[in-house]
Image 1 (cartoon, rainbow, N blue to C red):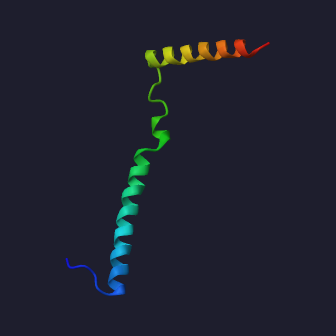
Image 2 (cartoon, rainbow, N blue to C red):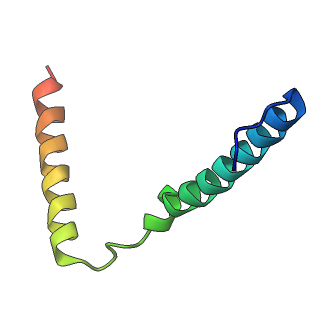
Image 3 (tube, helix red, strand yellow):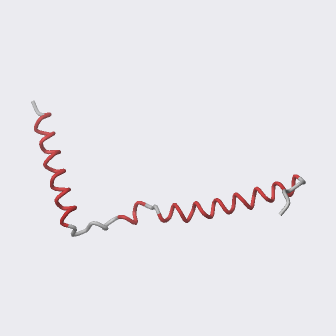
Length: 67
């Protein structure tokens, strides 16, 4: 396809390109939506251990911060 020569052809080509890019980005955003990760570690023993260790660290930090 030869490059557009008139202003109208250039604008039409740009509009088509923008529409394609927007349609791609919409689907990519939907796939990376953080809400899709909710619950993915439910009942995972390793995740429970990580959560518990984080609680211990936060509690130790709280105790150090107290006078």
